[in-house]
Length: 600
Image 1 (cartoon, rainbow, N blue to C red):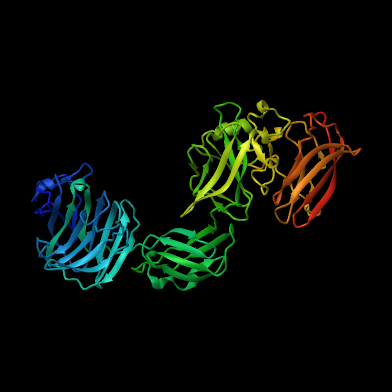
Image 2 (image 1 turned 135 degrees about the horizontal axis):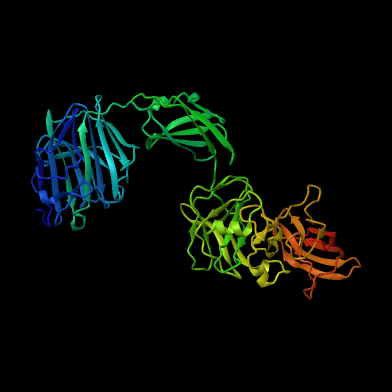
């Protein structure tokens, strides 16, 4: 029985093995250990029909069986260690021994478990119990708890190949290939395992599906699993098995809309091919590629496969901005939404993006993987898409997705979009919203159920003049499509500063309720003063007093006088003076009409 100090308990299988077609197989499906001898109580066959260590206390337990060994063979088995292996909690797999005592036998073994977290599967030869390391697998592959299918093959050319696969997967990844003349016990010898464990690991070793026999003949061609644009010049092709390196050429096997100038195997993964493009692929442009002629190490040729790839990039500040928010729905239990727009010329992937609220205890909400936005494309997120669609009845194609956002604080608050990088968290955009940004023609009670829309995507996010209430003509919100209040911009002949419209009507319907003086400047740091006069030269309203401008944006007038009443209909003049501390001065006058539309 196991003791607190490690000891050896040997379990020899006398029968209960299966020999079929030159193979030895043990899958433990019979659920019977009656034919095993030794310390049977150290192992059980669990409810999943797996062999499992079940020792009463810390120790070392060994399980061995006699099996036949042909000249070329494959060892297959599944191992699940539900802990991080170490020097005091490790596994030794005795691949082929010429005796039932590993301390004195000749043969081969695999070992899993060492100090540190960079554990690799180690392959060693034994001479009278003394070990000589032959090869090591991938560093860190077994540094944490794992559940792997392990396959070691010895071929007729004396090459030993170790491959592993996540349990349940059909994709094996190569850990090592090494040449070493085999010295196997003939015609049979011993195979087994030794578990070394502390008291907390006495039942955390599990095994299944042992198979030793002649290598299976590979008649299956390699299959392209995934193709990915790593950047504007690098393409990664991932196959389901290792490829023959000499088959990666000629380059004519890669027929692409952008020429391929190099094809090499990944240094750490022979299942992967790295391609280099001759020209940089612009973001958002499709790369069409057909791959053919590549072979696996058995000479099987892949089927011709075509793929279409589009380069996507993570957003950085200035690429993606908050475009609309509903934070005060019609009723307290109704859903909010928040919308973002891609204002870059890139195709953006939203993986690793999440919504946050500054100075709040609200939980961050991650955007699910798979969402992408092209230039000028919009996406809105809400916890209840059905309710938003029924309430606002979008009049055109929209992009509205469900996300478990809790309702935003009414009155004023913050919405931020951030992204997690390998080393940091970056704020992509952040908006301190407020009821004050709604149209001044609406009272607080009248803004319920009305979203705030961004006027200019390129203007500053936290400039109150860059936000307005959504129009009545779109049911007071535009979730997932173009904002009703979005600035149309200046024409090519209108210069850097000018009115968006020459006529406006401040009647609260959300359509041309504001006068907008748009500007696009060649640098930041400009200061603006702007005043409205009537047609007789009387000063009516000051709309900007020493206001610091962004590089683009708008100066707004809501049509109200100082006492809060709407100015009379008529012709008005907007005088502006914009200056920079380097001495640059921009002045001008714009004539416009304050109108009142009838029969609307």
